[in-house]
Length: 528
Figure 1: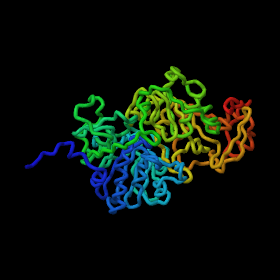
Figure 2: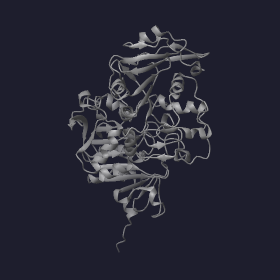
Figure 3: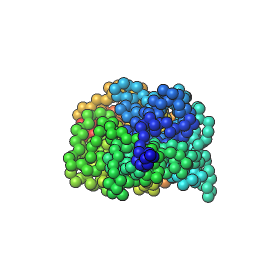
Figure 4: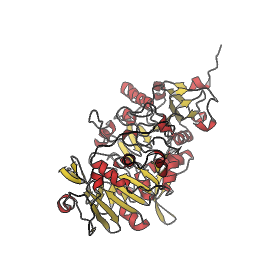
């Protein structure tokens, strides 16, 4: 007798069976934001299948955001294998060293050794491009990124010499230049949710981010491909409010259950990330350091009532020092509107591996909608990191030295904010500082200067933004604050204990166009 197979059992597969759905030469899109909402079990199975059998080979991977942290949640590092990965297009790359081993991610090795075609797109483009694939349009058209490293005249987002195809074009539309990202089909999508029912309807009740899950599923199905969903549990049909189900089962071909799935590295589960905290957040004070001084000074630029967006890196420490100083105690937190490029609103912006998901947020947008918010100019203040700032007024965070992190949301954020703060140490690679009685001393100078004649990569043309659209921009370091004006940098503040000539000007590849006269001291309280 033939026993009918229920939709649940027909869609429920092991991670190994899911990996078997991917064929040689396929294009695979995958969700994930650092460790958050990363379908790690499926990615691990894909990597292990290749290691054991040599298949699937020659895959193109599309990661809208850097996926995994290459520590406890390896994400894209699982598939960073020569032969398995032919090409990767990503909005960001996981670059920091493993704090336990000191090693960099395997994917960084493939990129540095030119063993893979690596392309970097701004996250705004990676998110919005999926919508164009989903509706079968020719591609994504935008002005954002003109003149940056994404512009074909500046490399077209190519991070390795193996990249031969031009995935971004300059196009004139109605008499104005735009960047055009032509669409191409996606064969497989790997997404992650909290729960699936027996038909494959997906909900996100345990996840603090939505990112591009829905958009990947739509784009893959519009391309005639297959969607694999990794979830924590199977629940009965009609057991959840329909508003909680963000992806209908008609978009899902296979469901992998991983009951051991955690929220992120260092967070097995915390309802605080879902906006349901019943206890205050106590991270303890940050130790005094150059980064803390910078965050303290950046905090003074944050205004109550103004939507403030924080980027990855030193700038994301700003809310923590605000909390230390009592600015966010109790209901005071509601005076500030904090967000990140990944969609949470309100609550407390986290740093390090917990960046992206706010603690105790009040609202959440998915990834493409958040970039609608950003590109619409609705984040008037932005605090972002910087790796280089050059004589032409260009800032670089995307490619420098051995690091290839890409731009993330930086370009969209910087191009659309009204007030910009760029944070980072004055030099790097070995910088050591001393702090005493409100004064700063340089115990050991960093080996690498950040104020360079020409940036290794152009992530945003800050001076053009100041000159052409009236942006305001500050560069905050541990020893000096610069104001970006239409004709160049102005040295606006200096730390007590710092010699302007030998410890600032002599370490710059170019000189400020002006020095404030008189030159104010940075507040001694920043260094205590």
